[in-house]
Image (cartoon, rainbow, N blue to C red; front, side, top):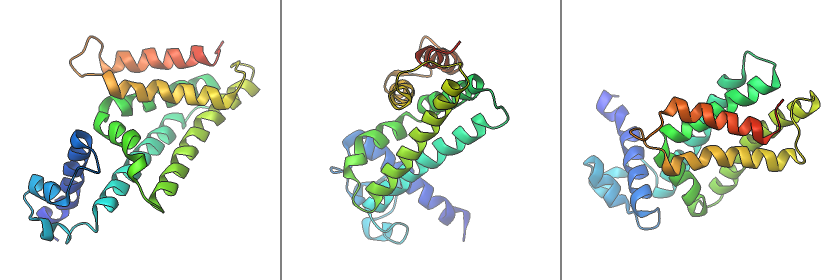
Length: 193
């Protein structure tokens, strides 16, 4: 396989992501995706099965990236406060760097059909469960105080996802400043000592 041929699927996913973000999944056609990467509509099907498969691949890629970043963040320390801080930092950093993915991932979940929707929703639930477990560990260690670990995990995740809607690289605060502040907010939210 040539380097051009191996780069095609990634270019097609990027084009689909851009169009899904700009005009929404339902309004985007395969011909438009093909035109954006310089491939005629029918030839596009040599590289991708369907528009639905493209959306599912984008959603899976988002979850792969989030789960991998989370795992790397929490490895190497057993301290509940440090683990939650690192997990939140990874979560916020992803959303600051991947605003288009976050936007499409949240808005277009409704456009996924089965079995893709159930698979993505299960992966999202697993990701949320990772945060809930971190918070529960902190509660068990006596360093966090929350009424509900589930509600606290939702609030922490919402903090990070919100960054994607307003953060800009040329804004008032750098990515690192936002990441640090949001981790601090999350620790306060769970009543960290």
